[in-house]
Image (cartoon, rainbow, N blue to C red):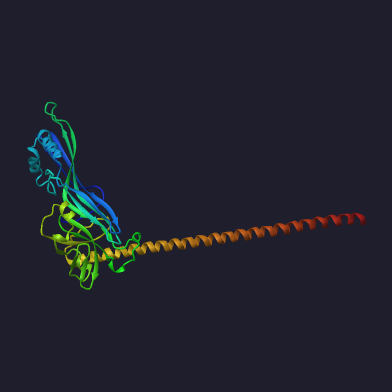
Amino acid sequence: MNDFEFFVGDREVDQFTLFLHKGKAQLSCRVFERWEERTSRSLNCGMKRKRTLKKTIGISEVEHEELESTISGTFGLEGIAGFRSELRGKLSRELGLQISHEEEEEFEFEAPPCGRRTVRVYQLVRIYHLSFKDSRSWFFRKGDLFKIVTEGLDRIYDRSIKIENDPDCGCKPQTSVEVDGLVNIDLGKIAILAGYRETKNGIELPDLGMLVNAGSVRELMFSTVKFPSDAIPAYLRFLADESRAYLNGRFFPELGLENVTETRSGPKRHRAELFDNLVLGSVGALAAVLLYKKAQREEKKRRESIEQSAQEARRHLRETVGQFAGTAHSTTTTSYRTENSSAPKAGYEK
């Protein structure tokens, strides 16, 4: 991979249009890519399992024959070779469309004695959406056509995760064997998500059995390290059809399922700034979450205080109204009795 990039879902990477039959027919193509899962398995507590993997690079023989026939009969080109010739210079990616030679091989996967291993392996797949519209007279017209061709690429990504301590195994935890973090290593046809430990002797890559001479993982970012091929798991070399004795590996940060690609800034200073921004961005996001939760707690206290004040105000109002009503009733009765007692007395004197 020239620029390693892992993403989720389909991504449109290219498109082109060819005008055929003297401009009276149009062939449009949209090119998509996606990472498809090739194997997935979770093992723990020293468990061993065998899995048969199939290597598929190119397009199937049936698809190849159908495409060859369509290109020659409908598009009016000299097969796939003529198709490649027409597209030369129009695509940003190399057009493969070779017949795939499928192979199968069995591999064994093993979990740590007291830990867990989750195997997740992906292959990059390219999908061609071909749309042909023919505007010639009915005698020559071949009819409109829409065809999808799927091509397996020699790009394999291993996102497997291994942990040494799994509580389900009932072993005594070993704090010294856990990794400090994860890093992506781009080896050309193969990319690996690997755990690392920073030691006084360098950066240890326990899954690959290697020790890299570097003071910190930051020094390795976007740098190149030479790897012997036997350090790379055999099932990855098989799936990617990789046979070289040594592979040049480049280190990239692990950003979850987001895009992982080198910036075009060039100087190491900018790369260091990128790494700092990644770290500071993570810290900033965490701080934002904490501040948000604090604001929520303060808002809850404020609302509770307002509700308590409102309840006290309502209670005070009820008490005041009750006192006023009692006083008013007493005053009315006294006045009534006073008026009635004075009236008879006046009449008596008369």
